[in-house]
Length: 161
Image (cartoon, rainbow, N blue to C red; front, side, top):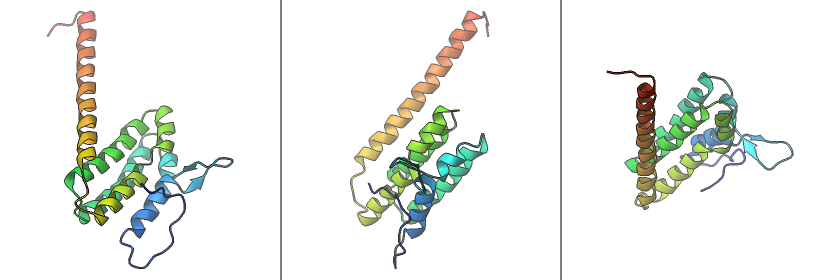
């Protein structure tokens, strides 16, 4: 997967120049002084409580819309949505989420998927099926644990339905 670490040059007939610039702005626009690490506006927006992660996710949806326009396989688009959803959900957690926002490059990952499947629409999708299925299993397990924990808590305080 390509890493977008600098503003891409203008190329004639590049279908993804706008998406590439957006991914660069959101994920890699700013070099961290004294390191070779880069951060983007998505991480900075995530520092704004409440709205920041939502604004970053909304901008990230533009990359996904481009994938839908190119008619990428649905499972690949689902993987792209999961990348943004992880960025949104984990990025919303105070302190830890902010650190995660600076490291998780959802837009760069999604740009790589867009380029891969635009070049070869029949590329294998098995890894994306496994990723999406695994992510859904984690969500279902998390919800089950929350319900179980709530039931234990209610039982401990003597609540009866």
